[in-house]
Structures are given as C-alpha cells and as structure tokens.
Image (cartoon, rainbow, N blue to C red; front, side, top):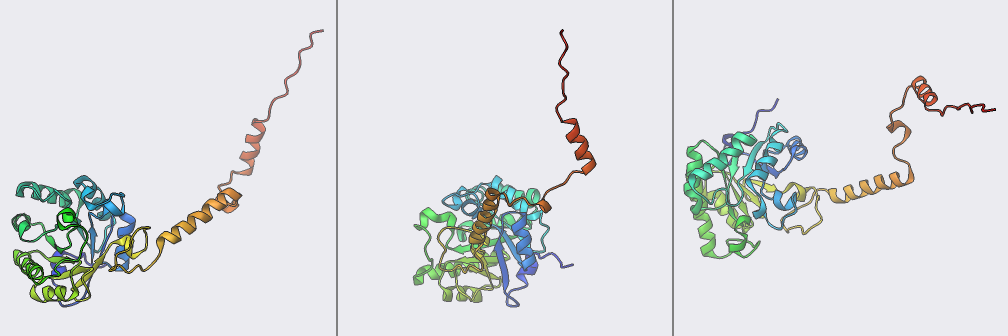
Length: 290
C-alpha cells in the first residue's frame, strides 16, 4: 500500500520530480484524482464557481469549504488533501485565522491549508505554522483580490511588479510554507522564482518551469459549458459525454426501452399467481327476493 503523501514529502520533491496537483470537491472526484496519481488534491474555493454556480470565488464560505473538504477526505486518498481558506477566513485576527484553519484539520480532516497573498499575510502564516498547521502559499493572480486587481489578469508584467513577486516568494519561503502556487504570471518570471526559493512552486497559467502544475478538475475533464482559459488543456469532454448519455437515457424512457427485462426484478411465479388470484373481483350472488 502506498504511503500517505505529506507536506514534508511534497517539500522533498523540489528538484526531484514534478508535482501533480488537481482540485476536487467531493468523494467521487477525489477517488478519480487519487487513482490517477495526484500528489496533491486541493479543495479549492473555486467550488463557489465550479460547483455552486456563483460568479466569483468570494461566495465560498467556511461552512461550504469544510463540508466539501470532509467529502474529499472521506475518499481516503493517498494524495495530500489541502483545504483552501476562503475570503474573510484569514483576513481577520490571527486567533480567528488559526480557529478557521483548525476547522479544516479537526472537522474536515485536511492535512494542510492554502491561503492567498504575500507579505501582508506573513503574520497569519507564521501563526498557523506555530500552531503546527502546514501552509501552502499562493501568489500572482489571487482570485480573492478580484476587485482590487481589476479582474483576472496576468500579473508581474512590469519589472517592478515582477521584482515584488520574487521578493514576496522569498518572504513566504523563508517563513516556512511547504509549497507555493504561482498563478497567471509570465513563464520566465515563474522560472526565476522557482530557482530563487527552496520550496516547490506549482504553476497554474505560469508556464512549464515550475516544480509542478495544477488545474481545476472540471477544466481538465471538460466538465463545463463556460469559457476555457488559455492555460487550460482539456483532456476529455465530459460535458458532451454526459449530455449524450442522458439524451439516450431519456429517449429510452420515452420509447419504453428502459428498463429492459434484465433490468427489472421478478416475482416468484407461485406468489404472483396467488396475488393475482386474491385480487380478482368476487362474484356476488344476487339475492332472490321472490
């Protein structure tokens, strides 16, 4: 049986082999990801948009994140399960941040948490690490900063912004996080950051030079009907497969082809005969009034 992947074992993969990471939001998707060989399963706050139909990830709540993380953990995966701390769960006091992160560990069973931001989050990151909670960082495009960054745009495109990202990556690495997501930054900048820090970088829309890659489960499998970002490569078209399959199912219902004889349960013939006999109407004798 494979050993459970941990935060330290992910850290040890730096420069050794590429880290394979994917999101998942329930038991079946976690089982699929784990059987396919995922090193890390992130229960992302992207569940707000991918699963719950909201416009942005800001609608993800702590209760929703705990609910879905617990469902992933119940898959009993070999992969490391990381809970994504939603908006306003760590933009608060250090005590409340620890309490919220602790829910991922105690209630949901996650083995680590992820949070967005750089030097502004340094104090809460240190507090979490002091509380023995492994932390994954996240720089570049940070969807929880959607309104302040002006939307979903590539980050670090000027020399100053690029240097800021390099410095923030070093700050987070030195603080003791075990891995760092780099989202939507130029590929060469991601390469510079990857070489500048001693923890693994995991890219999403940040080119091939990171220590690993992550995408959203539904994007990889084509299980959506919306816009597909440039950096996504769908490996299947589950949406079309699903629509085609359900269309055939509904057509068979309409035609009477489903269920077939071998898809039905049958009653013992003797019992059926007895039941049928007992349900036959009784002939009532007409009273002779003459």
